[in-house]
Image (cartoon, rainbow, N blue to C red; front, top):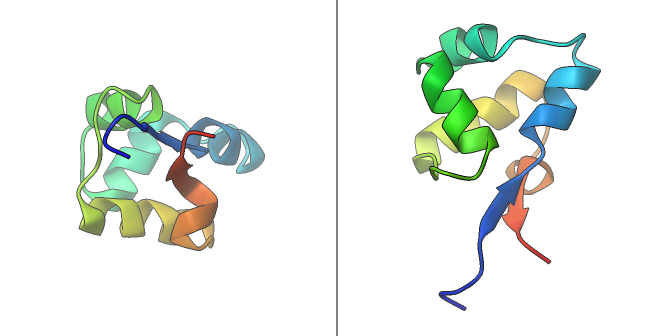
Length: 70
């Protein structure tokens, strides 16, 4: 189980939200654009609080935004 990677749907959700820029999402959740880019690319796992805030911005449950790679 330790070898599974956390993935996300942030890019898709940003697209569906009218091409929301990474900087705008970062500002709404209290992190930098660079942090959003790293999370989106799977290079960084967000804190639980940040993950919930990202999901809240898009009006989605956490598991619709973040999930284990299948």
